[in-house]
Image: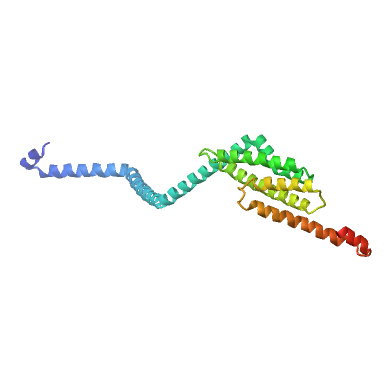
Length: 240
């Protein structure tokens, strides 16, 4: 029945009855589906809580993001350095056989000096100098490893040390009992040794002469001091 019919027909009680009926049905429906409303409320609370938690987590992520970016950059740098170090190690391993031969050069020179193989020692130094200069030039190329450059520098220092030891050996021999020809031979060795790593200065010959005379003077002084003075004639004759 339409609303107009109820109101125009003078039957308001029907409208009230209809309203009561609808209200009762709504009440019954509400009671019947009460658990649905409870679940809806609980679901709304859970969603609200989850949204709040999600917002908190998002804030935490935003706060931690700069630190994460910084750590990522640090990790990238570490990985890059590790890869570079690994490349250097692989390069050294690839050159192992040749490297071991080169590393033995300083010991070979020391052995020659210890056994008075002066010519062999000098030739080995000259060979090592030429080889290391070529290797140093190659190690300066953009694609070369820093490890190879470091090894070359170390070897150069060792060969220079051996050169100094060879020179000291020659000077020490000049202080001993030697014929003039042998002395001149040693002086020639000194000249070759001194010209290995640096050009000879203009006054080199003068200083070499002074060093030679000082060595021979040390030998003569030692010889004179060793002559016994108990026999005056023998002492004077040997001193002369």
